[in-house]
Length: 230
Image 1: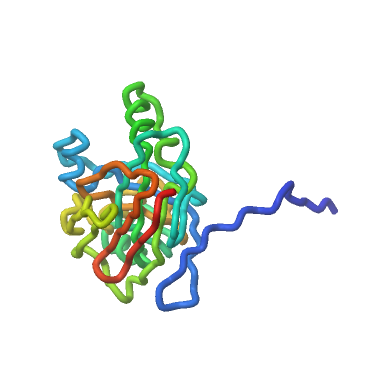
Image 2: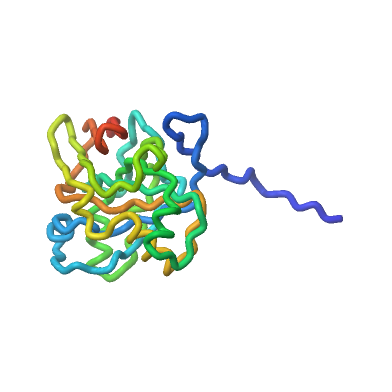
């Protein structure tokens, strides 16, 4: 009988701690929603209300509750985008909003770090901009708060500051598409499974992060991130 062995150890899935528990959430895939706050859509040059559109990040770009991050190579314009993150714990296929809401295990606070110069240049040339979003350490994330403690979030404050100066602040009810609407739309395109994360978009105020900056973000009183860029 032929025994198959791997060339190298199989990479382990990132494990996000669950608040108030010894459980961890093993990450499968990361999806991100573009332009899901009207004010941010306008600052990026788009005025119309459009259906959610999605891009992905590799799971290993997550950095869980970091104390510091290394400034990435190949950019001079690193931007912050603070976001509510949905954690999925059920298979979801072509769901309605009720089914979508039932699939939410909990929420985390995340930051979609973006190489804006790389992204802008790729857009001008009509090229993919994966490398502007999916680079190493591009997705710092907090622990997950189970939905049993929060219920479905449609209200609340999400904010980010740099060196104690407020840069982004928004209300979750200003999202164009709610968490359950985002899940329902995404489930038309792909089968969502336990372990999937969805970054749900960022409020206005995105901007540059420099070496030496201290980044602080919060979601209501429950979730926070606090780290330096080295």
